[in-house]
Image (cartoon, rainbow, N blue to C red; front, side, top):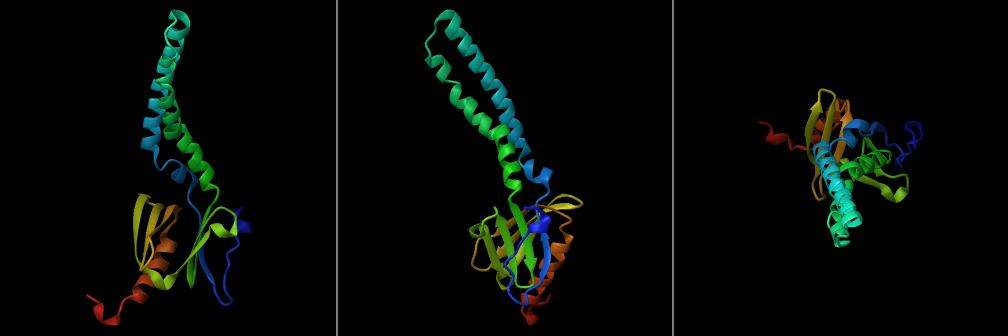
Length: 176
């Protein structure tokens, strides 16, 4: 689904204010430290597996020697390179939109993968900056779990809308 094909189920009279998706490199490499550890562990455990196979073949050691590093190789493959491939695959399916009535989060192309949150339920938001033009935004709701919009490029447009929404919902007598 390309940017031109994004379809949002807008009600009659509802206007789309903003739409976006995660920045690909930021989203894929947001857990780069864990991936780096996983890759190093994968290399070390693969070397251990290679040595154990050589010992079994040349010195007739037990096959249990090969079975010991095998789970570590599989686990480190998932933590290291596997995690990067999984994040890149997942990035292709994530879309965000903000209308004048709701916040939409779509993960996947099917209709049941679309979540809509009413703007009246938004209580607060927080941002985690990754650079001058890159941030993740955590949106807090009154009765629901927070939603994180990961790795947004140029998040200021969305943040301006969220700031306006939160200020409109504050009671008039609570200004400091």
